[in-house]
Image (cartoon, rainbow, N blue to C red; front, side, top):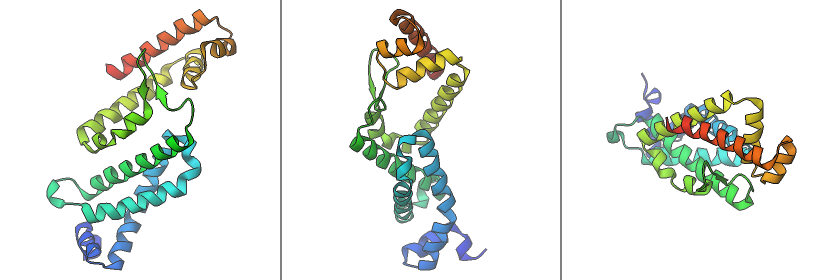
Amino acid sequence: MSIYENPYELIYMSRMGDEYAQTTLFLQYEGLLNALVNQTLLAYPTVRRYRDDILQEARISLFQAINQYQESKSASFKTFVCLVVKRRIWNVVRDILVEYQHKGFDSISLDDQEVNYYEILEQNNRLAEPEYYMQYQNAANRLQEEIGLLDEEERDILSCWMASESYQEASKRLGLSKKQYDGRLQRVKRKIKQALYE
């Protein structure tokens, strides 16, 4: 194995200013950066038009990861890159959403208490903790599975709620009374909460 096939040698050489080593590292991780950006855009389609900017930020964070990585911390370089890049991407997405104030996308409530989307993203340093990140991913997977099990009417109700439609707007669109809409919405919320906290 040459030094240019060993990521740790590449990191060292890159820190010493070796341009070939830097280029090799960037080429090796370009696919991963694109995958992380695409994953984020699937979750937050409203920021798709900023893909090039987000990808550029991901590349900058790869450079930071090269300079900050410590082999003694017992995490692989690839794992460290994923955490650093995801944190940077989420910060960029948060800033874009705050700037343009996308109404109806900034809060999600499963009960009477509002959970602010931006406050969740502010805590992104917790996602750097592997155990917390795994719990987050498991909860997100359970949520998607539960949404997939909803029938068409329940998905329509969930869609109205996620779009922050008023009870009057949603009930009129779905051909329900406000009371019927509220009752069915509460059932959908209970199903989702049960999936998330089981």
